[in-house]
Image 1 (cartoon, rainbow, N blue to C red):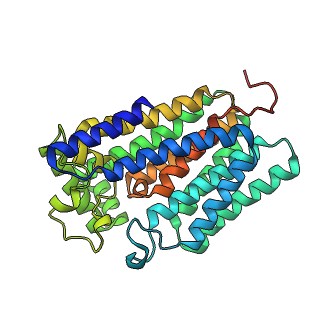
Image 2: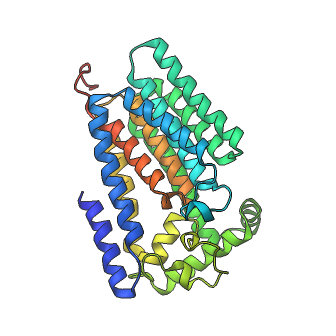
Length: 321
């Protein structure tokens, strides 16, 4: 709660200095707080049914709204890779957590079949990133059954996400070797790379307080987007650096690290903690190259998953030592 309050307070401070719009950050903080509380309560009462229902809801939302966008539905552009991939990864992780939470073999098999269906939905929807993220979560969850030290299993995907974020930052700064830079430029579109560079340039000139929340679209020299809600650099770390300075980046990293610490200390089984940690790390990797965290459904879903994985079920066996 202290970290979330600091995120909300810092967004208000930077908005007061530069005249920004902190409503987006405040909404994200509210979604995270409400989702985590709902996850803790529902996970304590219904440790299997709650994440199962969440997985089904995430799959239904992705299939029913393939053009998920932060803008108005009547003006939304067709499709949004970051949000779709994030919801598919969260739905897969929720189904895998529910599978590890039940002691009934038949139900566990059915929940893993649901996770496989979510991965297959990524193929049907044409979301390569969502299919890859969901498959990675599913494989890591299956392998987590043999995990003994959850710290090592949580550290490995976090290191991969941190490396990806560092590569995005280095690409924006043109600090990578020529061959690696060319490979990344071939993977991502030229407009996205231009947005990353614009965000890093704004962050370099305003490293203390940033330019103000929600002001990147106004100050970026890139062509104006078709929707005001699309004026983002498609990278959570670069957006925080440009709009709220280095303090905003540190607060974002602190929230993520606190969630991982809570998963490391949770009384739930190690496979559940590892599955949730891998899922949230996959979300962090997607957020490094897209604007996935700009969607309330994604931030609330991530908080729900963290709440389910750290909840203490009232009717369960003795906690794992």
